[in-house]
Image (cartoon, rainbow, N blue to C red; front, top):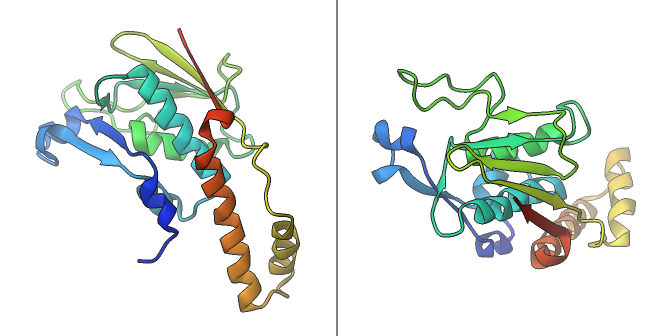
Length: 199
């Protein structure tokens, strides 16, 4: 499997999953998510998918500074509705990592390990996403804005040619390289693009 190698340098998200432990899936329920895992699930890498991963990474680091994230024990809230823009794409990435879902998720085993009703839209948050630990009630608001990391000017030109069906193979390849270069630069400039506020 071939993919941009910078994916391998991105910080992973380490979790402890009580459900996974109970079902004998991973030793002690401990495993980790890599960016490539999220890319495979989404089917692509873009500023939105990267932003969802980054927001989750930075938000959960603030919630669990010296321990693994407890998967299934985090509430997620968005100010947007599910139908707004790329909210659904972002929600899918965050759901994969945290286990949180709206009403459609896992209903639990004998009253434990439920994952449903942990994700909400149209909330009062003004940030990109709010994460809340269910055990301590500690919250973090994460704001992600990649606008300062501009795309290469050729990206738009090539995108138009691809949409029109007039791009040749070399142009399609160049478009992909330029697209992933922007994603790489987003990860390289996290401090400028992400704000985390805990309370």
